[in-house]
Amino acid sequence: MLILTIESSCDETSAAVVRDGREVLSNIIASQVDLHACYGGVVPELAARKHLEACPVVIEQALQQANVELSEIEGIAVTAGPGLIGALLVGMSNAKAMAYALGVPLVGVHHIEGHILAPFLEHQIEFPYLALAVSGGHTHLYRVEGIGQYQIIGQTLDDAAGEAFDKVAKMSGLTYPGGALIDRLAQEGDPKYFDFPRPMLHRPGFDFSFSGIKTSVLNQIKKLEYPLEEKTLQHLAASFQEAVVDVLSRKTFKAAQEHGLTRIVVAGGVACNSGLRQRFKKFGCDKNIDVFFPSPLLCADNAAMLAVAGDEYLSRGLSSPLDLNARANWPLDSVGGPLQSDTQSKR
Ligand code: KG4
Ligand code: ZN
Image 1: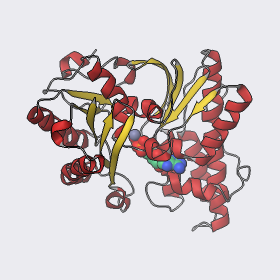
Image 2: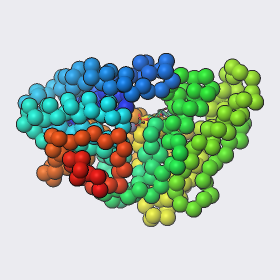
Image 3: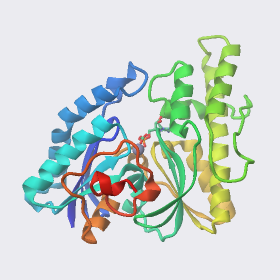
Image 4: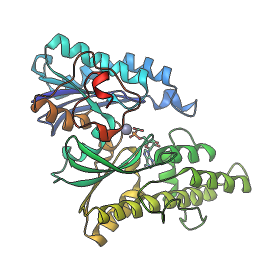
């Protein structure tokens, strides 16, 4: 099956053409980072307006790059939530209009479902596995039994890991989004230079908390001379990143062992982090657990990742109605299939 996928949940407008839920023929991503950088974060209204301009353009580019005619598209998958409501509605309106005009089925996919299934575009992975979703809005651990079968086993109680990266970057005088900048600085710094806390590490269960690490970094910055010297900034970035990586890796591997899982998938924007990738690979070798990271382009927000679930649901004959509504909040463990009309999905 040849499907078109559309993602617009935050500040990336993306469209992709994917065959059989595995073969990516195109994956166009238009980032709005420059638009929001001067505000220090995403401005929802501006994001929605930019998606409105970009959506038809990226769809056209995705079809061209895939060398596919619109008439060949057999189904459309779109992010239906969670995310910024105005941003989501733009992608969904484009998807619905195209599905209606082409007479093909539409399927609403959960954004995080897209992230944690993204490795299937590059690897063969057997179920079940443990998925760590780490992005700007999520830090969640799921037991994944199959496509549409997710059980949440841990989550952040406050900030998401990516949010902590972005806030620490901002308080260090770096631009938004700061995750990748902190990662780059950390490579030149000493991870033991500052001693930041490891919240929830020794508590039972698999929940996380990152706001304490962030506050601790802020308190440290207040004791230093501002603007921070390059070397101090590097040590700060390395020590902060080490605290986050330490907590994420130790808790995730403990969860895998307690749940008897021998495969771990790490996905979402923070999965681009070089320190996180190295630590997970090392722990994976030491503990005999297979670790899968999507390549960086497929870790960050992109439309191709929606094709794995989208293709599966459409192939099973499951689709969403055209009165499908976007959902700003939507827990993944209540998915179990494509999003239906709003009343049906509020289980
Ligand atoms: O998945 P994503 O692209 O969008 C959301 O769904 O939120 O994730 C974006 C997040 C941002 O917080 C960004 O700073 C973070 O991922 N990020 C990183 C890195 N690259 C992106 N965080 C740490 N290290 C990186 N290399
Ligand atoms: Zn995302």
